[in-house]
Image 1 (tube, one colour):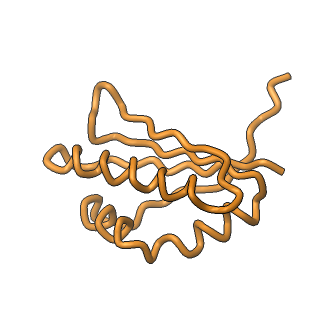
Image 2: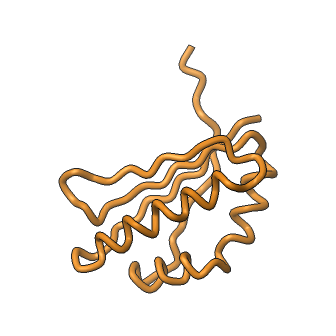
Length: 98
């Protein structure tokens, strides 16, 4: 069953660019893993520090495996420093709009 993960982050104004760059790097890391079929990094036009990462996975277990181990990556450590907390997200399924 295909699933997506969603991480919604709000970086302080003085670290908005660094947060955005880290988000792009995190997305690129995901696409290089097994079962990741794509990703989007969405930046709020009105608030450049507001960034959402959406990744798509061919299987739930593939997404869970990567998301369980990826928090040890130094990029997540830096994101945590910038946000003042560990970024949180979730795996979910897309609604069938047919």
